[in-house]
Image 1 (cartoon, protein in one colour):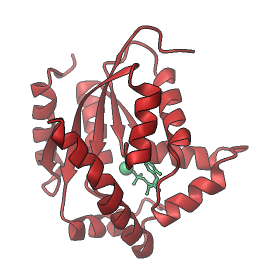
Image 2: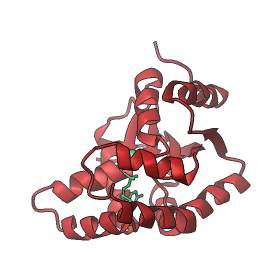
Image 3: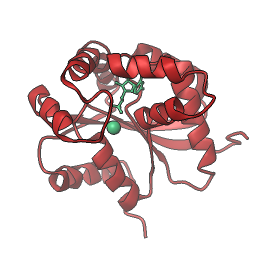
Image 4: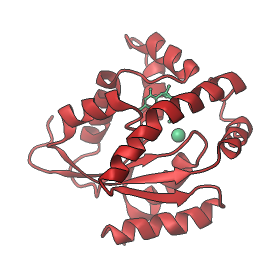
Length: 201
Ligand code: C5P
Ligand code: MG
C-alpha cells in the first residue's frame, strides 16, 4: 500500500494530559468528518497486540510518561492512515508530535505525503488536568498520581517547546480547554471553519 499522489490533510491536536483532546476529537470526527487517530491509543493497542515486539517497551514508556521512539509511533500512525483509504477528508492526529524526536521523524517520513493545516492547542491549568485524569476512570495504567506527575514534566519540558515551534510558524490555534466540552467544541469548530473545513452533509 502507498499514499499514491494524494496529499492528506492533517491537523495536530496537542495540550496537557486531561485537556480534553480525545473528547474534542470524537466530536470533530462525527461533525466534520475527520478521522481521529490518537497516538496514545495506537500505542496502547500495539502494546496489547499478541506478538508485538514493542509491547514491553511501550508499557515502560507509558508508565513513566516518557515518549516512545518515533520510528514506532510514526509507523503506527502511517499504517492507520493507509488503512483509512483515500477518500477521507483529513486526519486529526491527537497527542503527536510530543517531542523533537517525534517532530523530526514525522518530517522525515511524512512531510511530502501530508499537509499539516494547523495545531489545535487545548490549554488548561495543570491542577484542572490532574483532577480530570484522576477522575476519568478509564482504567489506564498511567492515570495514577505518580505517572500523571511524570507526564506533566514530560509535557512541560518536551511537548510545550513543540507548541512554541508551531507558534513561531503562526500555525497554533489555542482554545481554552477548561470550559464545558460543548463550549470548547463551539470554538474548535470555528477554528476548522476558519481553515476552510465545513460541517459535512
Ligand atoms: O496521549 P496519551 O495521554 O494517550 O498518551 C499516553 C502515553 O503514550 C504518553 O504519556 C506516552 O508515554 C505515550 N505516547 C508517546 N508518544 C506519543 C503519544 C503518546 O510515547 N506521541
Ligand atoms: Mg487521549
